[in-house]
Image 1 (cartoon, rainbow, N blue to C red):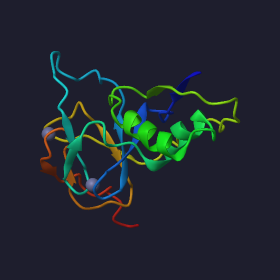
Image 2: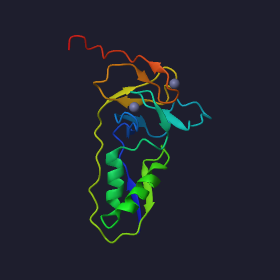
Image 3: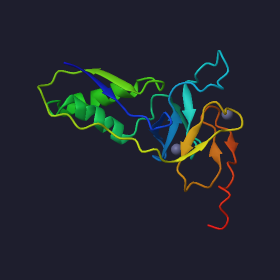
Length: 162
Ligand SMILES: [Zn+2]
Ligand SMILES: [Zn+2]
């Protein structure tokens, strides 16, 4: 049985990501924005906007996304197969929000579709503005550029009264 799992994007086309180092979540834009210079080559790793630590581009799946993909494979999958599957899923390119996997399992109940709420605040780094991110709205410290890791001040939300 071949299963194709689709991880949902939010209404703006952002994919939820989880930092493998600090486990905080943010989102990055899935695909290419209009301002992306032609010929831009994707880096081999991205930097966490919160902790500033870089990790390979395939290391950012959230636990929910991995569990969901494994859940789609069905409960017939053994523990061993599950960890192998998670490793395979990890290799999938960041540009894709589709996880394709080939698993042998009996007909199993599959989980309902995942939902991605349109939350978090959109931010553009001054150096790589064509790779926008969305970060938690209660994060007020400086952020790191996803592409080059440079720190930038994203400014308060002009909500002084609050
Ligand atoms: Zn981090
Ligand atoms: Zn940058």
